[in-house]
Amino acid sequence: MGIHDIIEGKRQWRAHLARVKALPPDYRIAYKEMQRYLLKVGALAPEGGNVLVELVDFFEQGAADGAGVLELIGEDVAAFCDGLIGEAYREAPGGPSA
Image 1 (cartoon, rainbow, N blue to C red):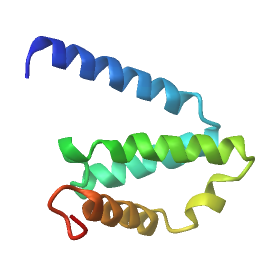
Image 2: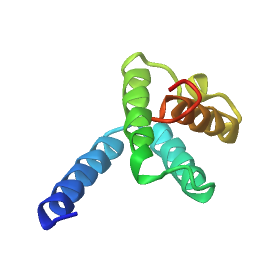
Image 3: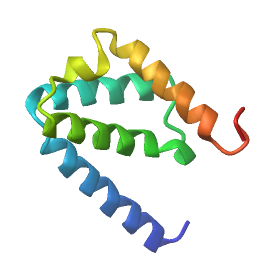
């Protein structure tokens, strides 16, 4: 990984954080809790980094539709995250659906 890759990765991460900051407060709280959970269980491998991007996409759409965050993810945030992990695993190269 060269310096340009590091700089580009940092630029993308900052843009991602700006998108998170633009979410409604309840969505931001849920995102932070989900990010913490996914990091804790080791589900955010470098090749699986799109999980957080897809989560923000999902949250932005839900907020635009006027849905509350718990309407989207349910009361059990950990179960929702486990579903995301399973989906990412199935879609990963070499995963069960590959």
